[in-house]
Structure formats: structure tokens, C-alpha cells
Amino acid sequence: MEIRDKSPQDPVASLYLVDGYMRWALLAAEEVVGKQGLHVLLREQGLERFIDNYPPELLKISGSITLGDYAQLCAGLLTFFGRAGKSMVIRAGRLTSKYAIEKQGAIYNAAAKTAAKLLPPAMQVKLVLDSMANGYNKLYAENGQELHFRVEDRGEKWGFVSVECPLCAGKAADLPMCWGRNGTLQESALWLTGKEFAVEEVECRAMGAPACVWEISKTPKE
Image (cartoon, rainbow, N blue to C red; front, side, top):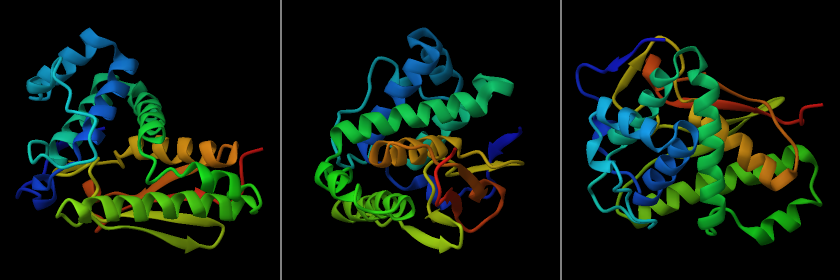
């Protein structure tokens, strides 16, 4: 897989990331590659300022972390593991989701989890996807910045759309590269439903698409 910086520069890479999201991604990366491995990765990706200096666990935009920084970390994880990069990044995405579920009550509502048990699996999945998309949109708007997430009905699958995708902001690639979101979506669906659902990225901004799109099956895996 080849990943490089876009030319001309992608304006999405200059948008700001919520501090807590970078912290959770770094904690997940540390769990996957180890502390020393993460130090090496951060140096290689020009992110030395995060070595033993994770952002605060706040759902706020400080203006010190960009979507480009986040994408640089994601790209580093993919290249760090070579052929195993995809599975390792999905694992990191699942771990990131676990941190978010624990800390981000506004998006992952425990009361909604109880109510969702009365719904069929397809609607349970839609509930968690809607909660994520609406929660992200609201959080960034409250911090004075617009990011656009939405959910689409695609027949036997749901589509999760990220117009300004943080995972590949500023990057060009010859294959879809936002595997971390696969893990986040899988883990979030598992949290709500207790079941695994297939997730696939079918469009990627790094490959020239207008938005990153993941398709999530409406029926759980056997």
C-alpha cells in the first residue's frame, strides 16, 4: 500500500481535531505497538510532540491538533506493520472505540442501549450509527467547526459517510486506508447489540472520492 501527502495540500488536513480523540487514538496505538514502538512511530511521522505528552481527555478543540496530525498517526500505524497493518489498525480502532464508549456519554448513551434491545438488529445498528454521526456533528459544531457525518440506507447495508474524514485527511493512497473507522464501527455495534457486523470501506477520500463511506451489514455475522 502506498500512502503519500496530497498535492496540492488538502484543506481538510488543516481542520482541528477534538483533543480527546487524539488522546484515545494514542492510547490505543500504545496498546497495539507498545510504548517504545509508539515512540519510534511518532518520530518517524513527525509527531514527536506527543511522545509522553498525550492531549487532555477533553471533548474540546484546543486548536493544537489537526485532522492532518490524526491522519499522520493512522498512516504511521499502517506502514509500521507492513502486511499486518490493516488488521492492527482495525484493532486500534476497536480500542479507540472502547475508550470513547467509556468516556463519551453524550454519544454512547447507556439508556439507549437498554431501549435498543427491543429493536430488530438492523435498527439497532442504525441507532448506534445515527448516535455516532449526530454526536460528532453536534460536538464539532459546539466547538465552532463543522464536520459532516451522516447515515444512508443502502438496501441490505447501512452507509456511514464522513465528508471530512480525519483518518485520511491530507493523504493520497492507492487503496482505502481508513481501517481504524472499521474497528470503531464494529466495536460500537458490538457494544449496543452484543453481535458482530461486517464493515467495509467502499469509498475513500485518499483515493479521490468526495467522502469516505463504510457499509455496515444490517444482519449480524453467523
